[in-house]
Image (cartoon, rainbow, N blue to C red):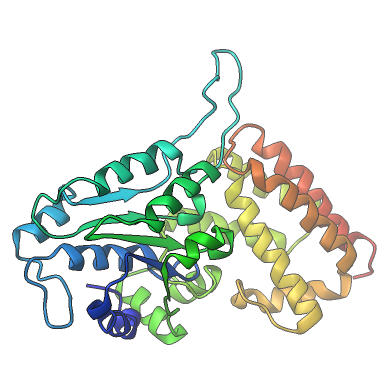
Length: 334
């Protein structure tokens, strides 16, 4: 079943089943359950005995196959894992690329789309995240969307539809999914047994679907606590602790980036988003804060984001970045 906050979305979708499109585009921010919703739709489209509201029955052979991940009339197209340079050689560091969907994957699903259905019904292709299609793959997908084979439904999932080709969007029926109300999201997280659910929900921007790692959350809280004391010794100790866990640079960059966002927001607008429980600590920092130097620290952080998945010299990069953070407080009297 879908998440509690998706009930109304499903009712809207069920009303469209009578005029089924060749392609749907499900959009919305990360963490609201777009992927899960799309997979529920895919199962419903393949179900051989759907309910009156078009939910999959969960009992037919098609549903059993789908649950086992081997339905013959279903394909899931996503970025390849551990994508690295093809010409990487021993003794040379390979530059990690951002994960993308390549044209070979699209060609495979196009070939699948032109085959006959094994069960005599629909064939369904889920593409996620659709914005990860590289230019060649996007153009190849566009061609099949322009001339879709009969009884084939494409389900595209995107958290950044602005990055899609306008022609791809125009070939899809766009379906924005609803973000949950804070109380609903918090209640759901608490039902899942997530520790410090309110703080975790705030850190994830109010979006409840995330991979919760209690140990990682503790490391994050300790690191953020060190940021409340912008002094060299305490911050170096915090970096040393992170270094022992061999974390990729992306994680502390994310933690620090949200902290900087809240500091700037509190300074300029009197509000914060990601660390509401830390408002008193941030408030004490404001008299010393130079907002221009804080923005300089943010620019340095942004420059490191493309290298976030590297684990090499994470400590040195983070220490250098935190020196910029310290400077944002160094020229104001306490």
